[in-house]
Length: 372
Image (cartoon, rainbow, N blue to C red; front, side):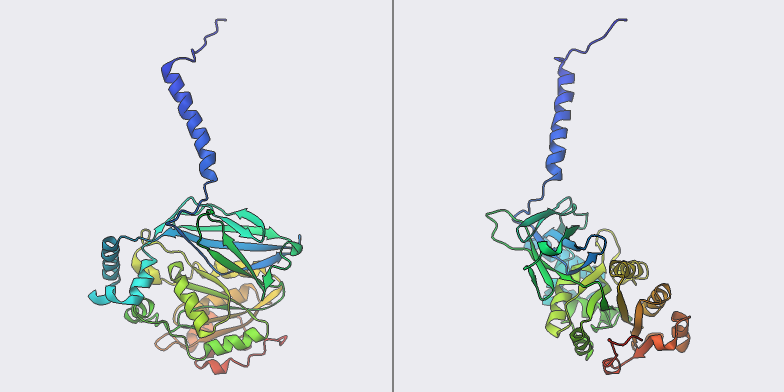
């Protein structure tokens, strides 16, 4: 049988082999590219860690956002003007300082395919690559002895690894949440923050043009519950772009620290009107994941009647009858607050399992340490 050999010195073959080698060498290099450039920023979101009972390790979720702000003044002004117009805001909105701060976070250049390294103590960990929206995540497992001495007030601090010459620090904290106890899963808009979701004009103004205002009395209720050892998860349909302003507002108003679970949203992907869409599809999976992470904890579900909280919470309580301590729904003026609605939402649940309220003082004395 005659054998045919290819001459390796053939120019086209050499070019193909060279290209293949370059690609082979480039792909691994890209997979480990995690340098945070000088014009990029990293923002970490508040999360909560749980213990894996099978290994006794802490499972520490990392959730961050890497992006670049647009510094070109001309482009930024035009973009802000376009966003204000798309939202239906008045022409002078672009001169409003709140709008400039908040809207700008919707116009950043999200950095994809980045996987920043995280440092906890003297150890470094690589995160997953960032998605098209610039968000990246990671799940770090550490034994009790590995974080001993690093915990302060139930919090574990970490930071993103930057170049030696980069003096900036991008830090975050994760709450170490015990396996047992009581947790509150709380909505934000019209539950603890005055948003007026049912009035789109007022909602836009309260979201982009005005200082945030808390629902009077709610921060005091939450602080009282926190003193009893209650933990908090804030699950909302507000977009992640508003996280810095929501977190600052809640700290200033005295709301307890907690993990945030907000909505993914990109201006490029969606109509701006979907910015305020209900979270019937996104909220239940998030709540179920919280229940699964802390199977030994019991939960209070707290929301309002403005959107679908009664329906969502009623369904969760039927799925986890032994896990839901109580449901609290704040009556929102102008919402469907009929008996028929609530009877349908909480069908199959005893009336002792849920409470409607208008004044936060009505729920302040709820017995968190009760076995009921």
